[in-house]
Image (cartoon, rainbow, N blue to C red; front, side, top):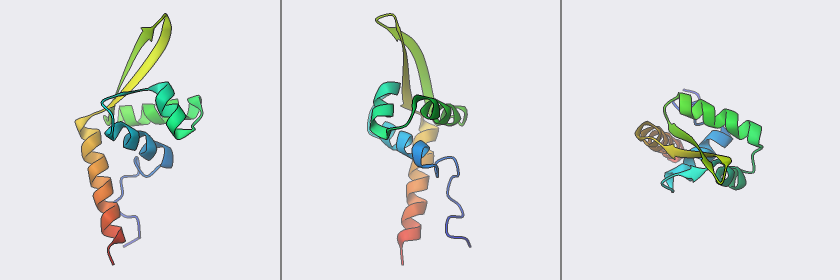
Length: 96
């Protein structure tokens, strides 16, 4: 067995894992907040959020705030389950 067999490839990306980790600890987060926390470029973050959303791990809401576009993200039940499974697999790898 290869070292990382069984790890969710969607979450095994550093930026996507960071996004999901952030969203695990808040009810929802605005795009700018996630960008500040991850240090990602807007373009790269947008692509990664879109991948997570298409997988059903995030719910993305677009609205306006003071006439400016506002994108908010919230982790879904599927995203929570995927993250918890990912963490469990990592913990198994760390056991001697």
